[in-house]
Picture (cartoon, rainbow, N blue to C red):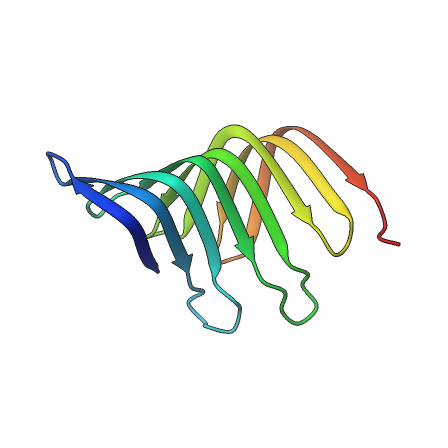
Length: 130
């Protein structure tokens, strides 16, 4: 994975605070586009999970028969060692070209295996594009 930030501030105990953070998570097989995760703020702990917060946007570009995907939430925890991400906050998942929008509370994802589990209060709307 790669991580960029507009500003970073080193805090005590190997913690770093980032502003306008961009993370790219690449699949181990390199055959799919990376997951691109943006957030206004991040708290990074050396060799541990990263807490992204304040307008988190997760995208994956279209590839093969898989449409582009976009998710938004207010907070997301990422473990780069396991390629897992989770949140207990509200999540909106959309496939803009297909007209699918799904709302849920909570998400667990294994980004390398492309597996997502929406945890509760799941509802979807399909509005075909004209």
